[in-house]
Image (cartoon, rainbow, N blue to C red; front, side):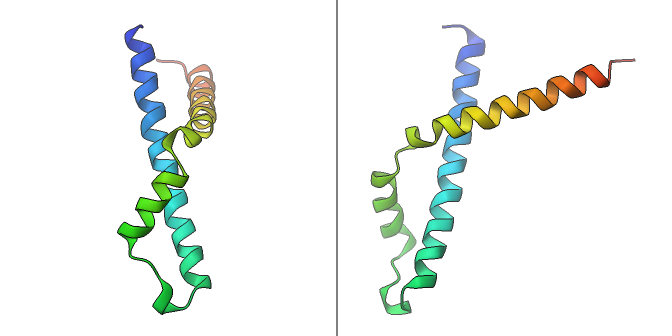
Length: 84
């Protein structure tokens, strides 16, 4: 495996983790809005169940798409703004 491949894999994993975190936060917020206060779970209990139901690998395809889009934007920028 090349160094570039390892770096890309690390970026995908970081982005997937961030996407999972954002999804968990919004899911908890929506759930808390629907449930009475006495039925709200602690964030620790919620995250334990959430991690089981939503493994990190579930978010890898979305992370790849976002990284591809970022790459396209950077390439477009480099084409339209050559170094002086």
